[in-house]
Amino acid sequence: MGLSAGLVPPRVDATVKAGLLALIVHAVTVGGWSLRRAAAVLGLDHVRVLRWQTRAVLGRLDDAKPGPEIPAHALLDWERAAVVKLAEEWGEVDLSHRKLAHRGSRLDLVHVSESTLLRVLIAAGIVLPERGRREPRPARAWPDWAELVPGVIWIYDFTHFRASKWCAVAVMDVVSRFWLSTVVSPEESSTQVEVAFTRALCTDGKDHLLEDPHLLAELAGGTVPDGDELPVLLAVSDNGPQMTSQATATFMAGARIAQHFGRPGTPNDQAWIESLFGHVKTEFPHLDKIRDPGELEAELDRIRLFYNTIRLHQGTGYVTPEDEHTGRGPAIRAARRAGLEHAHTVRVATRRQLRQDPP
Image 1 (cartoon, helix red, strand yellow):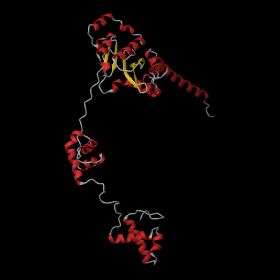
Image 2 (cartoon, helix red, strand yellow):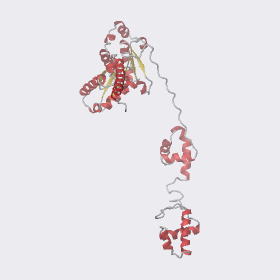
Image 3 (cartoon, one colour):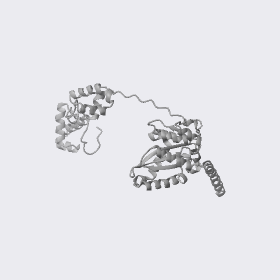
Image 4 (cartoon, helix red, strand yellow):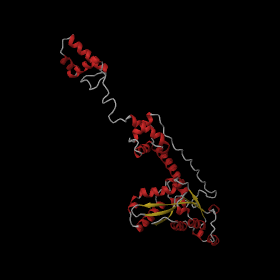
């Protein structure tokens, strides 16, 4: 019967009950035992045995399902019909069982939970329509002249700091990850972009790009040349109004900087600058607690120096952005590979000298 020594479990199958009752009947009729004694030996309460005997006469030894056949809180038939009607009329509008549940309450048609409505729809075989996915926009290719070498492709963006309620715009080299400049300001406008790029040009030794009198005269006349025709620098950004404004376009053209905008709603197109802000705010969480804008700017300048000259960057092969930006990165990586190979050779030679062959 599948039972072990000890008391009979609280719930057993009908076959087990029938087997136990047969043993008790045999003990009573053949052995002359009392029902109480036989039940006690089997680890059963005699009241339980009497109840089983009554149910056996009625053919109901199987345990009944607990609770009523239909839960007291189950939906009524008219409510199920109302849910189906709601899905037929509003399914193409709401496209979600959660919205449909709230729509039913809003229309005072049926009041059910979101999960209950979904179960009714599944039971009725109703599948809500899905909105077609928007076709992804292909990424705009960089100009052919924009080489993947330090000092050619820059990227910039704004980020905000909670305590001070000020923002900062940072300019960074895409290839070397060198953080060129930062401007802290209470607003985001083309003025901050111009100041940030002016500082970046000075930091990178390219401030002479701001001194072309012929181009400045052309810009003063209201003509903004196409940025792709000025193969000096490429500035990558999102489509914020301060990036796409006429004032920013005029300044960029005057500095011989072409503009490249990422796809709307696609922050991965600006992954380099997003990674910069993410690392800075994660590794220096106190920045979001600084209330004084002057202190915030001074702290960002200190962190920028640390980021450029001390912090090793995985994306550049674990050299500092300054190493990569100044061209020392390849030599440092080559020196590490040579050092690893030399260390391996020394270890093998040393072990061979210390090894003693058994006699």
